[in-house]
Each structure stands twice: as structure tokens, then as C-alpha cells.
Image (cartoon, rainbow, N blue to C red; front, top):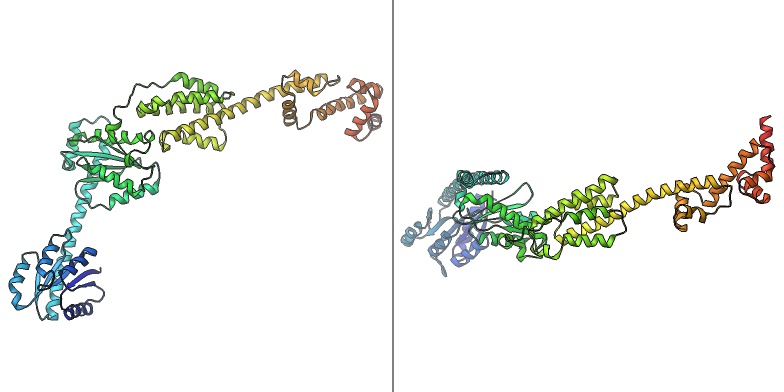
Length: 518
């Protein structure tokens, strides 16, 4: 492990001499910084804190005593070694009051310098061991606190006294007498969630905050005081580039730690309102902003029933109008989030699921939209959810309409074929048949070809020639008589159509079949 060592002395030769001796004796162990006085040394320490500082007592600008006093105030104070002459002994005694562990008299003796450095190294190693043990204890205590909170928030029916007792066992009463809970949602954006965690993780533990990621992949923060939660929330939002996807719900202040379950529910409830609030301040929503929203908005069952019944109709405009009734301006401005959750569940149950149960699965795009619309919280805003629901309703409407149309068409096509087979010997046309089944002429022509694979004229000819072949083989009627019986008054036309299908005339066909039977 490479340590940083700072040498402060106004005599250049001494600075360089000390550096050379240390680097020869301990190659690669230290990264050495040099300073000509106390001011330079303090500036260097501010840029990069040193593990060990060796300083002369007498220096211009700021002497060694002033430097030692300034360093002693730092949160990560270094191990100190002072250099003094015989005349500076009183100064050396003063320095020893400020946690200086050793001093060396000038001129510096190599062996004394190395022995002092080794003593400092032992000190640093012991300090490191203590810090690691403390950090381990802190991690254990923090883990126990987190597990206690997770259990309390997951369980049902805990009263305030039992919650308090469990929190006291975990040491959570340290957050009293005033605290807040915050819940952070990043709408499933893992990149943003990572930035939030980095921002929280970069802050040194101070006993005033506790945070973790819960089973819903939300960050949860417990913070002392009434402003630190807001400060941290704003810092996290800034770290995410003020993304509109980040929403942070903050509870009302808690006093007793026994209220912590209630405060968590408040923060989680406030966070849900990201769907309704357009860019709240720094993405932060306080429970006090939303707790008075009205719970007196009933889910309009009649609107849902009408929507379900309209699937498969030509009433797109009415469908959009009904959707506006579900998500009207008054509800968006005044209703509690529970209303919109209930509407979402009702749409899933009474409209979307009903369509799929009745008609089976639709296209991949519709299925994808259906899965996304299953929860409000798949969306960054209520408007995004409403747009998705509208698209899904209209697509499902087209889907059901198409299925119904295909079913009706199949039935009507079957009736058309039945009519053709019963009347092929008459002078019938496609106009007569389409009129018989009450379908538009052009639409009937298109659907007939899709249904049979043939044009109307081709299909009629095939029926007639099939019947002619049957009569040619089973009767002695003249050819022109058979032609008339299947709908051709003109013998030439009959023979032309027959040759078109069979490659030979009707008479040749009869002779050929007669010869085959002999």
C-alpha cells in the first residue's frame, strides 16, 4: 500500500535530503510531496491529504506550530513528525500538545529518522485496524437497522408501540426527535437508479441518514431533521440531470420512531403522484401536497360497461369520449391516486381481459400494449398512460371488428355459394348474388375471390361445366339440350366454355367417355 508523505521545510537541501533518504530506504512505499513553508504545506494537504507530515518548526509565512494546529482540525488528521534544533525545544514541547507523536533534532540522523517513521507506521496500522473494526460494526448496525425497517414495512397490523420496541432494539431511536422518510422512483431506468445510489454512497456516514434499495427497486431514505431529506433528494435529482423520470416522495415529519411505518407509507403514497404532477419542484413531492386530494370519486361502472360493449363497433369517437369521462379534468385536478389505480384495474378486468378471453390473442403489438397498460406505474405520466389506453382501445376495437366481419363474411359467402349451386342453370349475375346476401357489389367481389380463390364468373363456369359432364355421361340428351339445361342458350357459347375447361368439345367428351366404358 502506497502512502502519501508531506515534507515541509524552508531549507531546500533538507527537503531534498529527507526525500532522498526516505526513497532509498523505502522504495515505492511513499508518494512524497514537498513544501517550503506552512502555507504551501496546508495548500498541498488540501489538494491531497497526506498520511504522514514531517515539518520543521521554524518556517516563514506559517511556522510548524501553526501548520500542526491547522492539520489537527482536519477530519482525517495525519500522523505528525517535527524537526527542531536545540534552541527550539520549547516549541517542540508546544507541538507535542497537538498530537505530535515524535520529533527529531537537527541535523537529522538517518537511523533516528527511519525509527521514527517505523513508529508512525505502527501507529497508522493500529489506527487502520481500529477503523476497519468500527466500519465493520457500523455496517453490521446499519444492516440490522435496514432489515428491521424492511420487516416492519412489509408486515401488516403493527401498532406504534410494537414498532417502537423493534426500532429501539436496532438503535433507530437515534433518528428522533425529528425525521422524515423519502422514497425515490426512477420509472425502471436502471442508469438513473445507479446515479442515485452513487450520489447517496458518496456521502460519508454521519448517523443522520440511512438508505437502501427495497424489493420494489425504489430507493428508501430515512433522514434526521426536516430539511436533510429534501437536500438529499435535490442532490440526487441534480445527479440525474434533473430527469423528469425521477420522482421523490417525502413524508410528513415524524417525531416518535414508532411512527416510521406510517411515514414510509406517506412517502410512498406521495411518490405515486409523479403521474399527476407536471415537473414538481426538483422532482420532489411532499405528502403534505397530496394528502388532502379527494377520495370521493367513484369508478363509473356504466362507462366501463359501455366501453366493453363498444368493442367491435364503428364508434371510435364515442370510445374516445368515454375515455375522457374516466380521466376528466376534475378528476385529474382533485382525485386521489387511488381513483386512477381503481380505474386502471377496472379497465384491465372489464374491458381488456374480457376481449382477450372472448376473442383470443391479437397481434404482437396489441399484446405488448396490453401488457404495458396493465399498470399505471409503467408510465412516466398520467397522460402517457391515457394515450396508451386510448391506442389499445382503438386497436382492440379494430381487432374485434375484423373478427366479427370475418365471421359475418364467412356466413354470407356460404349463403352465396348455396344460392349459386341452386340457380346456376338460370341467367344469374354477381349483382344478383351480392344483392341476395345484402353485401355491397365491390366488397362482395373482393371477398368472394378471397373466400373461393376464384372470380365469380370462373366459379359459375366451373359449376356449370361440372354439371354438363355429369349429364353427358348419364343421359342421351343432345349436346345443345344439355347446354340449355346448365344455363347456356347458345350452343356455340356452351362448346367454347366446355373446350376452355376440358380442351375438347362436349361431343368429343361424350364419345371419349363412351369408348372408355366399352
